[in-house]
Length: 324
Image (cartoon, rainbow, N blue to C red; front, side, top):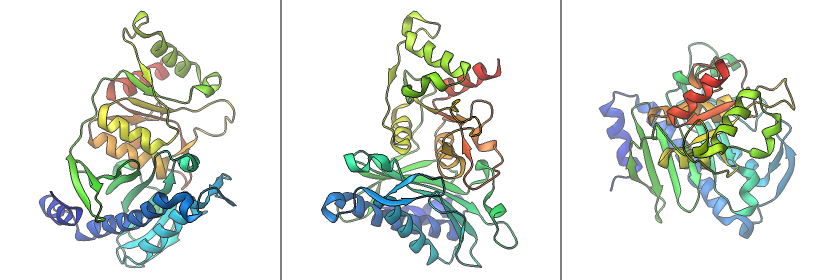
């Protein structure tokens, strides 16, 4: 079976990709292996529960949020190919190596509200080529389509790495010796699905088109969609997207009326863009209900966005409802 250390140089050579890109991916994965060890220990290491601090978004941090964030920062800083990084947990970007050719953005522990109850969480990452000139916030504000690569590590019953360098999607599973071994190549998201994921408790706050869409799904084979749908909701985006990658479905976190100033809850740069690139490389689709996610021009490091992603038929149907 092919290990990640064997796969990366072969993949880079086959697609004429820079060695530095592979080095950055390996650094991210090395940090995630350390995070995996911390997640696995949990209560045994006394690292569950609240950290007593908040992030730049004003959200309470878990102890493991802080640990995972620092592990990624410390590891990436030592890689000469990383010019800078940005984290969901940091106020602004962190400069690393002046001569580095890449920028890394990450959500160090997505779904961390579930960590204390032993539900799957993950690390999401995005890799960008650094533009010419000095490092500024603007260096990071690139459209999702311009990512050099992205992916995630899911800490679940198995620890799995899923990534793309824009030449397909590849899945690796962590073995007992601490090596990632390839277990799947080029999964494809079915264009059609009968499964959706959304937080139904927010239904009364959604826009009319989103309320109509969900009502149509709930009507099942007696409604206009003519088929019965199942609903899933893990409240861990990385786990939701992994399920969709493996068997199809649509994941939604729409804008709601409670805070009209916010176009959504999830972050474009740390969650929506990297996961959208993975899904699009696997035949899926993603958008904010009116625009393809990967075509959005970012305006800030912590920009929020409405999210609809997964099986293409559903994403496109939601878009049509919002354009009526």
